[in-house]
Length: 145
Image (cartoon, rainbow, N blue to C red):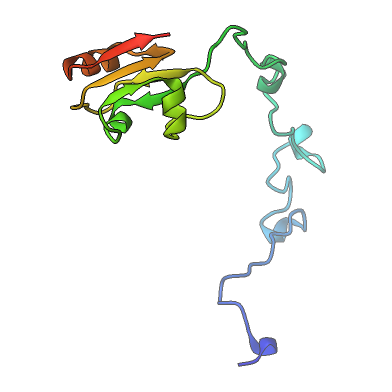
């Protein structure tokens, strides 16, 4: 088989319908464009996004993007199932950084995903209610600094 002998499958390539070539073609007269008006002209039609004259959606949208809370505080999260990998004992933010559980300057928040069975005394910047209850139930304590 040579490249110059390849052919497309039968029916894969169709000739375009030639509009406006007389009534015998079946597409004469108004050439399937209706009678008069913008849609019947050459280069026909209204552009994408045209909504009949009302202000288009793209122009109704606000120009500036939303509201950014200037006082929002972002936390690094530590779930209690990750604590379960550590030995029982006391941990604060510095100890968690030393164990590579958290990094960077952001404050640390303890969240309650998973279960904890060891006794931990944890000092973090914030903790969820479920995390606090789980650690207390295992005999430990959570201190917010």
